[in-house]
Length: 302
Ligand SMILES: [Zn+2]
Image (cartoon, rainbow, N blue to C red):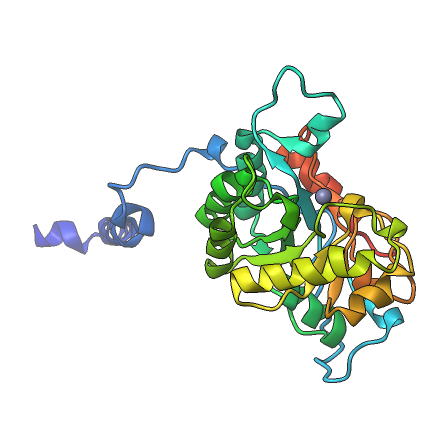
């Protein structure tokens, strides 16, 4: 027996067997062997073709607010705009389907972003990043929901929360409590859960057509109403139809709006904070098409 172990090649083989079994028993897979393996086809991940992490490593956090040129030079955070989240109906027009994302497609889009390592950010974080260069989490994205639809409460918020995300809900106050729209209590619940409630006017009129009398009706009163519901200041605004003009910006500033969101046209060169870009997440898009559009639309210089 002893002579058997004295043979060097036998000792080497024994050593290899010992090391290999140690690796097997200490590996995390072996330790969790009762957990079923994740089905690879259930994970949708996308690789970024460009680095969209917008944190500047050379420029420090600054107390002084950045000027327009500096803000425009920072990398844009992709911001998605959703409207209705429900299954398509036969009478929905081809155009309307752009604005209606089916529930399962919405879930797939959100899951893709979660699986791909995205982190949702909220308007205060975007504001601090744009104005003071405060760092953002890696792969930031913002989810926004316009028009007060009930499915923002029943579909959007639960799916976002399932994947650890928060959203921004732009409410038009005329709809509160109407059938298929959110109630005051539901808006309050979203706010209490850490989502942000912004203003989307009283009844969705085009900001470019406002007369002097419209500003109190469309901006001041809705802001106060939302503040009464949430107990928090109303500081962010989304333009109905994404439409804005230069004249609207000082009116919003006067009424304590810190930043305003449009759709995908170019930002104003003097007022980038009041013309923040968003893209409509189309009901026709697969998760990969959504991601491609995010990368394309939020490149530098737009
Ligand atoms: Zn709208």
